[in-house]
Image (cartoon, rainbow, N blue to C red):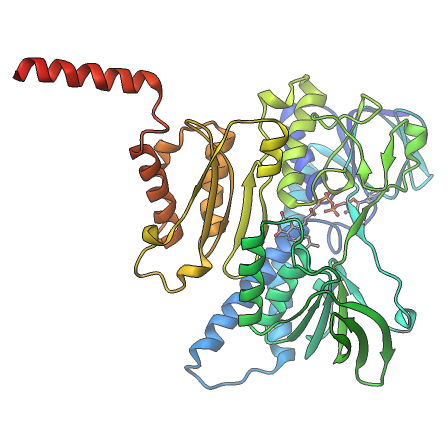
Length: 472
Ligand SMILES: Cc1cc2nc3c(=O)[nH]c(=O)nc-3n(C[C@H](O)[C@H](O)[C@H](O)COP(=O)(O)OP(=O)(O)OC[C@H]3O[C@@H](n4cnc5c(N)ncnc54)[C@H](O)[C@@H]3O)c2cc1C
């Protein structure tokens, strides 16, 4: 039986990142993936980013109305699909590059014992360390009539054969909002249906309002507190019978996509590997070790967060810990950077307020207010800046508005590298109003003295008294 220093199970966002990081250590690595990397498996985040960018360009050019030309939907979608294939090419190129150092083994992985994995029950390999990165799958709610129709989930929607005229998106979380924004910008009439009374129930209320307002501005129909009770198939359409807060509503659509929650992919005979899990995911410690200390779990399959950035950060920590024993606090603080790609963007980065409260951290909230806003900003009320800081450093925050995703990159870097926030007044935030308002917030906070360290204050006071002695 072949023995590897590291076996990675799953070649999606987290698994490929782990492979890329581990390839630098010169150890013997195998990556097991059950799908084909040329077509289906790979970087979902890359696909959704590409799709969103294309949709935004189409939307902007339609707004200009310069040509008066109406492009048929099938031509738009064919063009979009071509662009989407560039995301697949990126995955294939990464796999090709890594396969010079790593064995890519295709088939379904299952645990045979604590350190032995079978691939399609044909072959067995042994791993000194094993990383599980099998992701999560969409859960589909029970709805009458659903078995009679074809529907999509957040993965298969990228290969929908034809751009629909009307699309229902079930679930108003991060994925659902992002898809609603993308398809609305592509000219599709979108119905975003959420059971709870808010979109993005896990996020700050001010952010939820902005996202909803923006989705409605670009034409999406947002139905909150609404539940699809039945679907009825007609020859050229589907009818949704929806129970809303005020009664019942029927809507005719062409396609449905479910974005209503995910469950981890656990069908790996985890008990044979002595790896414990709950419905929420595989439980791990902060270095992503499972109940079997030689087995790690990263990305969507864990009970942490489900985001591409978390997939990367957990891969970084797990690989370093597995191969060198380095602990997480010496590698990177987890950034909690999640974002909803509606336009304007929304980002939550670093630690959230509840996390700070939980660990009893001392922090202060810095927020944008109207007199900080630039006068040339078109939509002042769409911009939100909330930053959590301690005396010198930024701990986390929430940004919403044009330029939010770009600005969060700088702030996340500062958070992870413990850079004092006063230094960020010189950071290249670009020309966005949001960027210059962040700088203003830092400058104002510094001016109020509350963040100067005592020795600076002491030095300043002694200098002041010396100067006054000289001039007196
Ligand atoms: C529409 C959409 C938009 C998104 N937008 C964003 C965004 O803007 N920002 C963001 O941060 N995140 C975003 N995400 C989330 C992000 O894509 C996921 O969090 C990320 O892909 C998780 O990576 P993963 O490796 O854990 O899982 P996956 O990428 O799902 O990879 C898991 C892999 O494991 C393989 N596998 C499963 N079981 C086995 C087995 N037994 N044997 C071998 N292989 C197996 C699967 O085939 C798959 O390739 C989005 C997701 C979607 C669907």
